[in-house]
Length: 196
Image 1 (cartoon, rainbow, N blue to C red):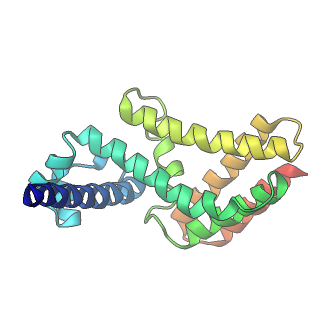
Image 2: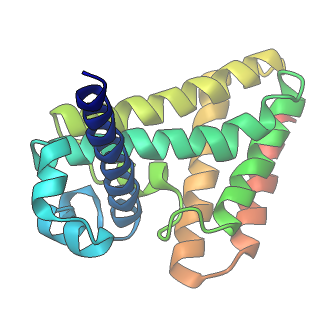
């Protein structure tokens, strides 16, 4: 009985490791080639995992894409939101979020820049589980910005969140196109000015 449970736990641990590795690689691919470019074969080549191993933990390509969005969310929370969470709500936290976002970009956490920016346009007019996951991630970010803007006393938090998001997406796009970190500082400065 003990041997059987240990064997099951070992398979589960290997499956979890495969799932995490594949999801992270899929998220990386999504920032450079789009979520639609993800395939089981391509993911197997990129990760060194077998196709059958990937299909054991993800039954469909769509499941891989949804997992990529979930992994990107986890990374975004860890690298952008968590570092800012100790700051006071409102102006201080918003400034800390913007600092963390610039640091996330500079660190090259994803090879194609911001996952949220990269996937939002790709799935903007689609339906289905992948589009829903992308939309939910973007909505969660906008809601966070709106809450912090409201706490800072901004008259129209929804408009402020729209402007901040637009500046950050533009900063991401310009950095990806021209390779200039200075664009991130411009985006940060303009986003922070929404509070004035």
